[in-house]
Amino acid sequence: MTTPELVATPAAEAVDAADGHPFVQRVREYAERVLAPTALTTEVGGVTPERIEELRELGLLNHLAPREFGGHELDRAVDRRLHEILSGGCFNTWLVWAQHAPLAARIAAARAEGRSLPELALRILRGELLLGAAVSDVRRYPTSAIIAREVEGGWVFSGTISWVSGWGLNSAITVAAVHPAAGDQPDRVVTALVEVGDRLHATPLQLSAVDGSRTERVVLDQVFVPESHVLGVQTIERWRHEDLGTASDARAHHFGLARRVLDELDRAEHPLAREVAAVWRPRIEEIRARAYELSDEAAAAGGGEHRIQERLDTKVASGDALSVVTRALLVARSGRGLAGTDTAQLHARSALFILVQGQTPDVRAAQLTSLAR
Image (cartoon, rainbow, N blue to C red; front, side):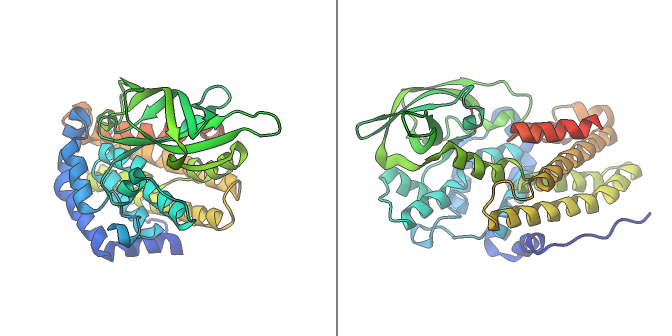
């Protein structure tokens, strides 16, 4: 049997080279020693405060922060490798961490622009707090969204956040709320840090995938947000332009999960399971290289719709590949693969989550168009 030649790109090669970084090596050792062996119990019992403390001690709560705050100022390639490693180790832990991880860099950027930061933001830069994220509901506006009302000294946020992962572990959440158009002002998006308090009311969601991520629906009941906690205000058109880069690209956690499944297929008893891995590993590496190349090129070009169809096609291909290899692992394990003590069903459900994560109308249309062929 012959396999296709791997297609390398500078972006993917940089991520592979990150394996030599001492910080990456420490995280990899932790993922293999702690995360992977407990992934099944974490799915059932949930990510714990002790797990968050472990991430903090490793430096994963502020790895993108400036060194003056104890961060590592890691570049994009190293950050991608961390996402691959953590998602392959324990997808629930990755999801909770991934809601928090990018915010230190965003806060640092606001500080570099001369913004005066509140103590809450400084504690995030120091890696002392875990953040949740609630930004995707803007995609559903005007059907629904968190609404921001301007008041003296800040804003009042009201509405229902569809999903917040890590609830009960996070001290604050990053919320994107819409300030509706008025007069000659267009619709604007206000992104701010919101401290968890008695005006935030959560309801658990019974999810069939990533149920250990402590994901809940949260109602904001007239929550006052001081101006000092605002990270940015922009038009909704600009917000959607930037969001395309988040929602339209295949991202690192797709490939971290895929590599974990391929490794398990390689260790399967049935020789044909190993053949599946041999066929799909180079294909997935090709998709990975393409995804990183397109994402970096789009970012350099200012984001938005730059080569958007190719990026969507690559994201669809990534989801399709995950569906195939997780099904193959389930088939190889036969009936025992459905047991709660087997990782086959865990990985298959995580792949289903990836299919709907960040699913804008364009992403959904691309997925369904592919399936209809």
